[in-house]
Every structure is written in structure tokens, then in C-alpha cells.
Image 1 (cartoon, rainbow, N blue to C red):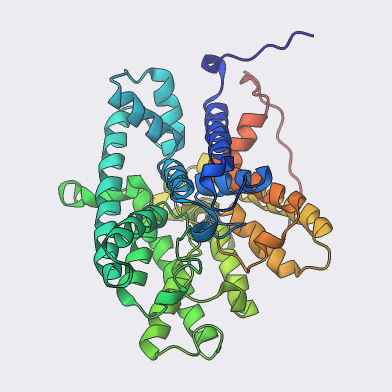
Image 2: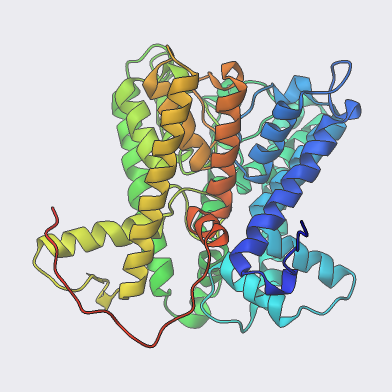
Length: 446
């Protein structure tokens, strides 16, 4: 039987993205499986190497081993490069390589870039990539410098510089990997550390289009409709998360209860922000109260914004669905926000993303609960949503999961980074548009 391989030129952009991320993950798996990557004799198991490579490339942060003790400097650097690659995106990194070697960016590459970067036109894409690279270098550099000076008295010059770089990349890319072994718990009352890390992940989670829009605000005089939606929804979610954690965990002795009032404020803020797809923690996630865990699941499901370093269904998707429902309740036939009308195609896309995400999590939970019989349902749901939202927060059960559950989380992290819609399109058989329409019918819903 002859097997033909579809040429790259004939592949849909979604298929190219899906295949590209898979290739990077497999390469990372091989590198992390090398004996030089781990501190223990021999090699790490293939499933744990694959899990770690996927978690890093998907900028998730879920771990099956302690990054600080299980990996050598080589292994940690591989993880950092995978995080940077996953955070910036396949086409941004590919374009960087092409620019370095002087290769021309063709129309095919621009089409794939357009899909990954969430742009509406093909014009100015290479210029946008250059801006993304400059912005990333500046922001990560600033984060590294601040963390270096803050940690130098604690770690020494060389280690502080390395830790500052690693955690700046991990935070801006919304990954959540850390080298301390217990995330940011040793800095639960350290304003400089927690505010720097949280600021990096918030900026990274806004999306490069929004960051660029903010930088050009003085010139353009106003923000785009997309940027206004992103900023409004992001601000609401940050405030809701912050205040909820503060009041829900205020007297919990295992989280905020033992901290000073100032420590409670900054740790509550940090804990309310990190579910936006960055798995750092200043208090033990497994010790949070059930209402806080449930809210965290909701925030992780929503995630960051489009064309950002984060995952989830995205803030704009949540915003469009919420506004559509509110407008329907008010009896409006159109979805209106900021004195603008949202396109029908956008509403359909938003509903589709939510449906696909919920179905993915639903299927995951059926398989994982079978494989992990006896474990807490809430803990398993938390882990699954954390994987989908590429967050990385964990109640502590990830290393104890079976190989089946780990593999399901690997698939979930991959789908969360590439995007459920992109994965669905990549796997589906595309049909040509027809010149006819079927008769319309009505059906009862609700």
C-alpha cells in the first residue's frame, strides 16, 4: 500500500501550526530524555520527558518532577527555550530564524502568520513580528534586571542573574516553571518579586496586538475595539479574582491567614492574577478553600487574550459570549458593546470555541476519572482545566497520576496551546463552498 504525504504547500494553515508545534514538542522530548538533561543517573522516562516538553512548549507549567532538582543546567535551558518558543509562537520564531539567515518571507508563511497572530490582513505582518521580538526582549530584559537586583543578596550574583532570566521568560510567556522548587511561596510577602512576576504575566497575557496598540496610543489617539474589549474584560477578571481570594482566604491558616495585612493584600492579588494562565503560586494551591478553587477553575478556563502568550478560551471569547447573552436577555437582536455591533461570524466563532473547549474537558474527565478512581473529582477537574488553559497551577496530584492521565493532560496542553478551533480545523476535512443554500427552519431551544 502506497502512502502519500501531503505536501506542506497544500496544507491548511491550521495543519501547519498543529504539525509545527508537535515537531517542537517531539524535539524537546528527545533533548530532555538525554542523560545530560537530568541530575539522576540514566534518562528520564519517555512519558515524563514528553509531559515536560509539552508543558514547556504549551507554556503551561504543570510538572511531574521538580524542575530545580530533577534537571541539570542543560535541561533547564532546554525548558527555557521551549517556553520562549511556545510563548512567542511558531511563526514568530520561524520568522526570526528567516530574518537572521536573510530568507524572504513568502505569501504562504504570511498566511500562517496571520492565523497564529490573529490579524485580519496580510499587510504589515513581518513588521509586527519585529515589534513582537523587540517588545519581548525589552520586557523580559526589564523583568530580569529587577529580579536580579532583588534576588542578588539572597542568591549571589551569578545565580541571581540566571534565575532572573529564567523566571522573567517563564512569567512573560505565562509558563509558571520555577527553579525554587515551591514556586514563589518563599516570597509570599515580597512586594517587589510578586508584583514583578504578576506584571510580566499580565502584560504577556494581553496579546502583542494590544501591547502595540497601547504603545501607539499617543499617535493613534484611541484604542481599537479589540484592545478595549481585552482591557475591560481583563481588568474585571483581575479585580474579581483579587477581592474574592482576599476575603475567602483571609482567615485560612494554610494560605493567607498567617501573613501580615500587607502580605495578605499582595498574595491575594498574586493568587487572583495567576489563574490567567501562569502557574506560579505564593500560597499552596492545594490548601485553598473549595470556593476559591472553583473560582480559579473558572478563571483558568477563560484564560488570557488572543495572540498572547497565554491559553484558555480567551478573554474576548468570554466577553463576546457574555455580551451576547446579556443583549439577548434585554431583547436585542444584535450583540452591541462600546457602541459597536459585533459581527455574526465572531459570535459563531466564540460559541464554537467555548463548545469545543467544554467537550474537550468533558472527554478528558471521563477518561481521567476512570484511570484515577478514588481521587478527588475537584482536584482532577482542576488539573484538567489547568492543562487546557495552559496555566500550570496544581493541587499537587500531577506527579501521582497514571501514564494514561498524563497522556490525556499532554493532549489537553497541546490543544490548549494550539487552540481547540485550530486543532479541530486541522483534523477536519475541508469542504468547498457551495453556491446554494438550504431552506431555513426553526427549532425550539432553551
